View (cartoon, one colour):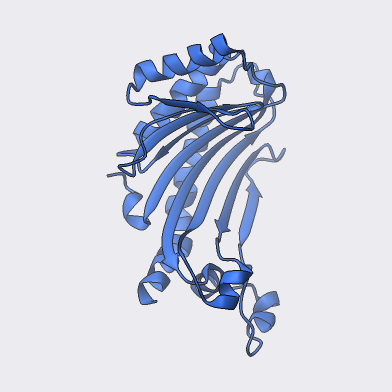
Amino acid sequence: MNRYSSLCDDFYVNMNLGTEMELPANRETVLHFFERVQKTYPTMRNFYCRERGDFVLEEDKDQGAYRWCTIEPRRVCSGQVNPESIEEAIQQHQLVLELAPYLLSVSPLDCEALDLLFGFDFTYRGNHNQLVAEALGVGPAWERIADISGVTMINYEPSLTIALDEECRQQFRLSVETRTNAYQVRTGDYPEEQLSVYATARQYGSLGAEKTFVETLERLTKVCHEMIDSHVIENVLHPLARTIALK
């Protein structure tokens, strides 16, 4: 079990490499890429194409922990849900980034953005938006509106993005995604849904001539760990978990 598993109900680590130019979609190239991924991870044997043209290779989802990888028109993605260790998930992403330049003709010059996302899901039956407001609070400018007698919170998804360098090319974003809609609030019929917290480190734009995708991923991994360990756990994840436990 990885060190973040105990903080939420489901945890995952995703990598997205966006490109300026479209990725190759011919049969030989796509199959060769996924065959190479499958050679390292033989249990990734479910291959299919979505209606919009995305190609997917993934493990069985029955056990709640699985790997997946996709090739989209302008993005190659990799993810692992509930990994045994974070290092294991990062190794999968490194493999995809090592293969992409050679098998998908992705150049560091062609990089639109490279994202590393650490996701934390909390299962909760109720108004997610009200829960987030109670657990994390609202800013002083909004408190008087939120405290109006008889009102109900139907949309509250706090999000913050910061730049980590002067050029704003390296960024960190912390966001909350709720899944409660107005119909559920009106009827009081809440399904058991997952409330998500996303911690994302992003490198924008083409990489320098001396930089590789794998080196950039290592830097983004360090950013995510530092931000989560220093700020996100105590200020976001623990308050959400405590508030859910009290409901």
